[in-house]
Amino acid sequence: MERTILGSSGLSVSPIAFGTWQLSPRFWGEQSKGDAIAAMKLAFDKGINFFDTADAYGDGYAETVLGEAIKDLPRDEVVIATKFFNHFNPDASRYPDLSRDYLIARCEASLKRLGVETIDLVLLHFYDELTPLAEVADTLKTLRAQGKIQAIGVSNHNVEQTRAQRCFGPYAVTQPPYSLIDHGIESDLLPYCQAEDMGVMVYSP
Image (cartoon, rainbow, N blue to C red):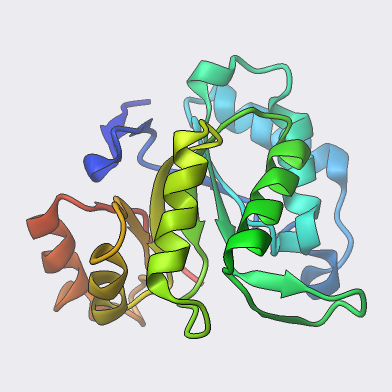
């Protein structure tokens, strides 16, 4: 399968990514872990090197399964994207929290679940109106300087939110929803990203 460079991130990825949103038993029901791992390995064998997950998918379960699937694959040929946004409470409730200490803790937990030393791409899963944008960007820069993440981006941000984030940090990728029903990004976000050399990885909800 061909590869494409994801904007200014420098990441060389397959045009199709393997998403792991389905590995959330609380929302989508129980699924076979063995089947999921087999599917991920088959995708890699067919040329897909880009795997998209989030700490919110199954409250970490999706990352754990992905970590098991890639442990025997050549690390330099796999590109992993994960996402942070939620603070998880013991009762399974959540609230937005990209504060410095919690973001660092979530990154450490994801590294452990994935079984890697570096996450190739970290995305802010949603726009956090509670944490100062400068604090979020500074934390991500620190994690990148420590070698724990490589590239950073945003997910589910509109063009105004994306511009605001990029005033403070080197966000190189965006992940918006896009489908025949929801194609509003064609009029604003996509032209903005093209002008700014920002990578775009769309998903269809």
